[in-house]
Image (cartoon, rainbow, N blue to C red; front, side):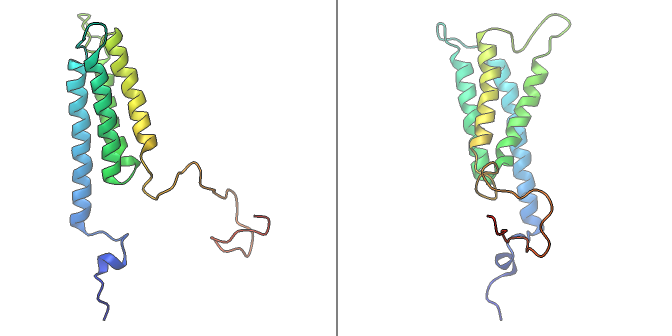
Length: 159
């Protein structure tokens, strides 16, 4: 008799409740990104003399939230979920209304919020470790057909 439960013997097999919790976590991350996009768009233009401190703070919080979400969810998808939601809302607020009103104006605080946020999101996703571990960019991949008689994990004579 095997003392290990089925879930521990086969970690790739998930129960329905674990999958539901994971899906709910990603939904909450997306809602956070949407909410932060709305709040950040309306609150990014507070200045402390010549420095848009609110825009800088929004960029820092966005980086921390995306990076933390990626680390907590165990992969880049966790960092990408609030980032994409923030980006969708931010792109909506960039459009000019017929009256000429803008939510994110083309001034220093708007540029810091928009471009700084894009750099923060990119940095957070790139710095988050992959779910499989290791870098997708630095691992060696074999491209093309495998030589006849070679096992899938086996290297050729020239390697």
